[in-house]
Length: 368
Figure 1 (cartoon, one colour):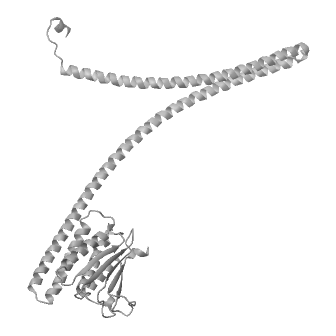
Figure 2 (cartoon, one colour; figure 1 turned 30 degrees about the horizontal axis):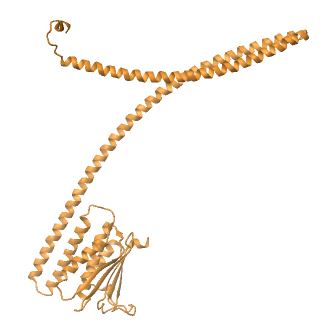
Figure 3 (cartoon, helix red, strand yellow; figure 1 turned 180 degrees about the horizontal axis):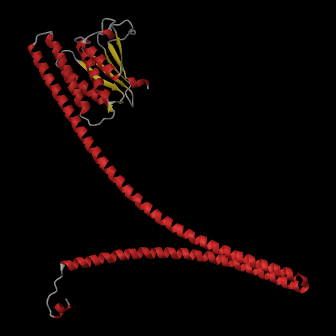
């Protein structure tokens, strides 16, 4: 390269040379980091040595005080020797005792120093073991995090598959209900009364089931669901279907805005729809009337009352009638563990002034 510069030829940088230079720079950076860490450790060691020097200085001051006390004793002994010569032997013996004590103190100091050195070595070993344990713990933590990520990914995939399956099942159910509705409608058009009327009732029930299924299961939530909006939609649908009749009836939903479990929402909506349908079909004369659905339970629905101001039932067998509508109501009530209470102006136990028919649906968790 120097020869190329002297000759004036252009210097071409080699990619390998640049890579080597970059590697040298990276090595220098790593060495600088290591040097900085070693320097920080040296500062820490210096601080520890400074603390030890302070401790030794305190011990030296204590020893100086002790030596001064010994010197005072020796001075008193010398003054005592002037006055009492016969105590010289005792003083010599005492001095020899002090020398032995000093020797013992030195030996104890050497022993303590050796123990301190051993303790430092053990502390160094413990520090290395702690560093190795921390490294092992870090590796274990990384492994656990990877396993958690893998398990989370697998659970998310399984949840997505489950949601897709549920969506497909609901889609197939809606399609099947539509097919059944079409078949019933076609059959009703080919039958004569009263068979056609019964088929149309079944057609209406299937339509209501399809509506309730769509309202309840189109929401992907699996938690408790509000009941009042569901019943309002069902009532609006039934009211629209009855607009063509000559009897004008008002249907309204009142009461609280409580929640019901998702598994009970569909059966409850179907029960209420069947009871409303019975009222619209049998309870009123040509002057019309009103049907009220009252919901009890602010946080969780505990009861529903469906009542009308119609003509009521004309016998005392309200709770034992075997019509298809009430049979469906009882079957759905048993399915969710609900209890039904009937009250009609045509029954002997009806209170004075009571008008129409009331059906109270008591939910199983109301007693909890």
